[in-house]
Amino acid sequence: MTPLTSGGVSVGLPTGWEGEIFNRAPELGGRSLGGPAADTEIARNVIHLANFALPAERGDFGSGAVELMSTGAVLVILFEHGPESVDTPLFARSGVPQLTADEFHPQQMQRTLSGQSGRQVFFNVAGRAFCLYVVLGAHRQREVLVPLVNEVLRSLEIEPAD
Amino acid sequence: MDSGVAAVMVILVSALTVVVLLLTIVVLGLLRSHGEMLRAFNELGVTFGHDGADTTSALLPDPQRKPVPHASERVVEGTGDGTVRDISGTTPRGGSLAIGLVNRNERTLLAFLTSGCTTCKNFWDAFRNDPALPRSVDRLVIVTRSNDEESPAALVNLAPERHAVVMSSDAWNDYGVPVSPYFVLVDGPTGSIEGEGAASTWTQVGSLLGRAEADVEAENERRIDADLDAAGITPNDPSLYPHDLPGVES
Image 1 (cartoon, rainbow over the protein chains, first blue to last red):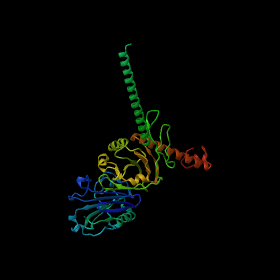
Image 2: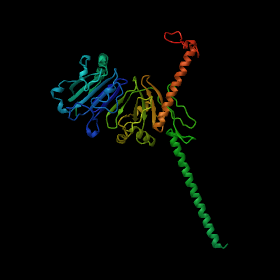
Image 3: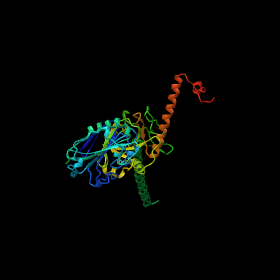
């Protein structure tokens, strides 16, 4: 497992996986591409994990990367929201989720791409609010790909907010 | 000649002798400095051949991996064990970054650079201009030492936008990087190091990769010929020209 740790988030990546944890705060030169239009709050951390080569230039929600995904590719994105979100109904789900193949649907993509499917889940853990967004390179391969996602999610450790 | 003129001549000759001695000392100092510079270049893997072109060690195909020396080259060999490992480190902006190399479909060129070395500046400049990658390379990843040995602030200014920069001294140790700049070509599907070596310009890296690719193709051809020979199939063997196959005209 390749360790990836920053901002109170750590994850162990299986062999061949890659990822990045970065802060998107403008003063730190973070990324500003993509993302949901309604999200105007300042996020804390953005975590991108993938079993394919992530391009250096990509949006918070994977624009620039999803277009490169082959059928066996998986992209896992964790987008942290501010502390004001923790107690809101949207983030009521507690703990890092585990996903099932049935939850994935092509219409859950930020931007629909032929053959791909996605899943978006909001949750809180350790007093921090996250949006989990997962993209599968091929919807028809979801039974094989979702277990890979869950393996990575199981290794996710999130420390309490400062 | 009166004694006055003789005295002046003695003074002039003495003065000239002193000047010559001083110039000799200066020239000796320059020669020594020049020698030290050449030695430093040698340690960086750059030598100056008879044709005036600076040359470096070659990127070579697996399984040899040892650079083939040219007549005017001083070979720089990596000290890694040849094992491909994923890379984990930080980014110049303080994030965390992991690069997957094992069991992948891509061929990745790892460029080991520092923010301080003069030769590395050529590459930082070239990479910021997003040069076309050689045909045999799918992506470029720049690897610097970790932030306890490297300046993140300097790297922020040097880093190209379109290529990943990961700060990892562990990667330098894992891949046995002897000098900077140094390049390692990783073949993801086979999980092997296809070639490695030092170079002083991006153009030179391209030609070295082309040479490595040609070597791989030549090696494949030799291996296929050897396999056919071992099976008793020689050039012009009838079985190589299956005229009796349906749809094949004789």
